[in-house]
Image 1: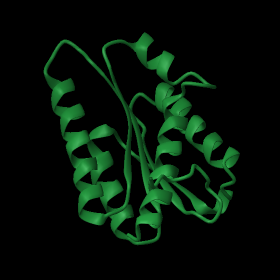
Image 2 (image 1 turned 135 degrees about the vertical axis):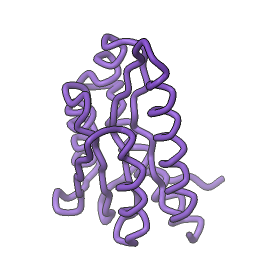
Image 3 (image 1 turned 90 degrees about the horizontal axis):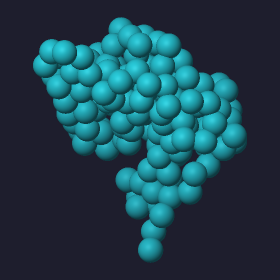
Image 4 (image 1 turned 180 degrees about the horizontal axis):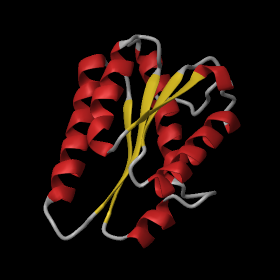
Length: 153
């Protein structure tokens, strides 16, 4: 069995974070950066790029993944369901675009975007500490980067 370890030492990772719903995304970003540092990552090996919203995450993630400088890219955002179909378009196209960026580049692009029905659900998933989805996204990025390195990609 081949698995990746969750260690940041010697890796370079980029985070792309949306500014929309920043009261949630800021907590996701804190969770991701904390996980990076806790896993041995160096501050200078972590890039944080901000974009307007979740819909813009894929284009920035694709650019970073294609640059060949990062072992993984973590996309962070928050889309909260409203009374119109806007939620489905933004969430669906964001997910599709991030997956496409990963497949085209061969670099793990991690979907750390909350897609929730309520603000309360978002707050719960972005809470500082265990269960913070930003921290979990960073751990998934590190694990996938290690796995792909072991697989020779």
